[in-house]
Image (cartoon, each protein chain N blue to C red):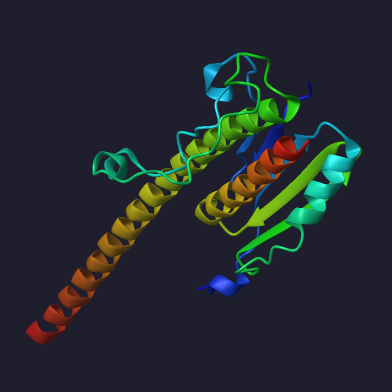
Length: 88
Length: 124
C-alpha cells in the first residue's frame, strides 16, 4: 500500500486573475509568494504574472486538500484586491 | 473587463472550467455562499466580525470599481470551485465506502471458504 508521502500531486487547478494594471498583478504575485505551504508533500502553489494577469497554479494529492488550499489562497487574493481598491 | 477564470483537472479524466457570468447576482456580491460562518452558527447568535466589505462604489449608487467587480467575480468563482470540489469529495467518499464494503464482503467470503475447508478436514 502506498503511503501518504508517495502520493502524486495530480489534482490540479489553474486560476487566472486579470488585474487592472500590470503593476497590480506584479504586486499581488509578490504578496502571495512568501506564504509558506504547510504540507508541501500534499499541496503546492506557484504564482506568476504576465502583463496584468496573475496566474496561480495549484497541485494537490486529492480534492479535499485542493479545496482547502485553493479557497484559502482565493481569500488572500480577495484581501489583496480589497486593499488595493481601498488605497487607490 | 476580462474575467477571472479557473480550470480544474483530475487523474480520472475529469476537466472542468469555471467562468463567472458578469450579470448573474452570484457574481455581483462579496458575500460568498461557501465562505464565512454557517447559518447554524449565525442563528445561534454569533456575530460575523470578518464579514467582507461591500465592493467599492456599490454603496453610493455609482458603478463598482474595476477591483470591486474583480472581487465580486472572484467570490462567485470561489463558490463555484468550492461547490464543485465538495461534490467531488462526496463522490470519492461514497466510492471509498463501496470499496471498503466490497473488500469486507470478499474477506468474509474468503474466511467462510477457509472455515469450510477446515471443517471438511476436521470431518475427515
